Length: 104
Image 1 (cartoon, helix red, strand yellow):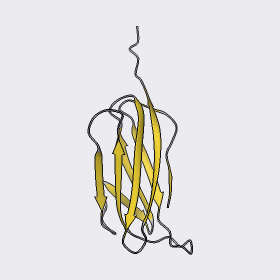
Image 2 (image 1 turned 120 degrees about the vertical axis):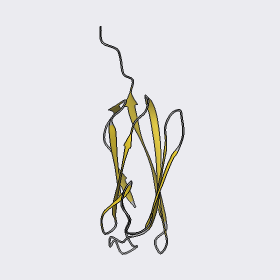
Image 3 (image 1 turned 135 degrees about the vertical axis):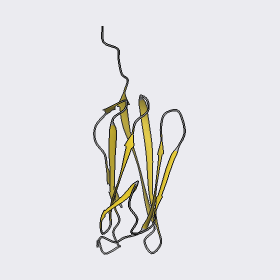
């Protein structure tokens, strides 16, 4: 399983998290998936997807998934993707959100 995200964001920005699920032979394959996002403060977000369902954890194509998360405050966010079923794998990552400063 691989995952990527982009550089630091601002509060209120949408962050796209994308990941792939592959067999041991490297072939893209579908799987039931879960994404968990832990903000620096506040509630944990958990989204689950069955193999061919879509929103909010979206299947883009075979073995490729994405999830759009809107940031709620500054700090370091952590996320965890997990696939279950025939292919069981997981990966963790993080992204940073910059504080918003008032203009004068």
